[in-house]
Image 1: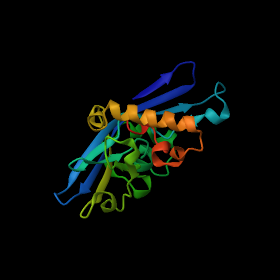
Image 2: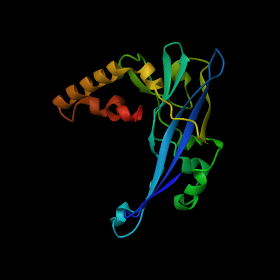
Image 3: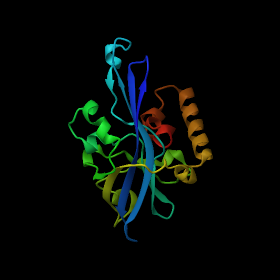
Image 4: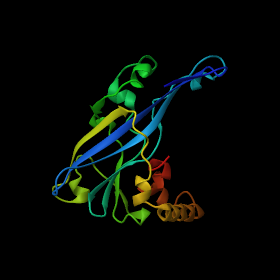
Length: 209
């Protein structure tokens, strides 16, 4: 869908995209996906400063992370952000030239390794401090023998945005505790070890927007 904002010299395109992870486990393959709503904005004309003109990369998406239960109580999260649909479906092309095609696509593509989303897990899903980054080439290091990433795909779709899955695994008390940890670290100053940790570099918007 295209929206032209009169008087603002701005155009916006909207689409939904589904990110799917497929993981091999000792119990067999498991898959999970999440649909997010994305937009790309093109700004042009003298109303905008030169650095504000042009088109964004289409990663301004609303929704939630992919949540895959690899084993009972052990979850893999694909965080919001990457991949950009432009890079997956039209690699190397000018975004301005292909965005109209992108929003009309109904297609699924394998995501190249270099565009994979950040993957994380928690040793204990009730404790934010146990967050760990997951190597997409070595899921066994995080989840045990026999676990590997089989596929990551991206689809342009008309399906509704996914809701409630992250909350089902990381409920509000989890984020309240995370906020407490963050405030405690702020009180200690920006040199606190927290700000060099993975948790300190993440945000709730990596999981929900």
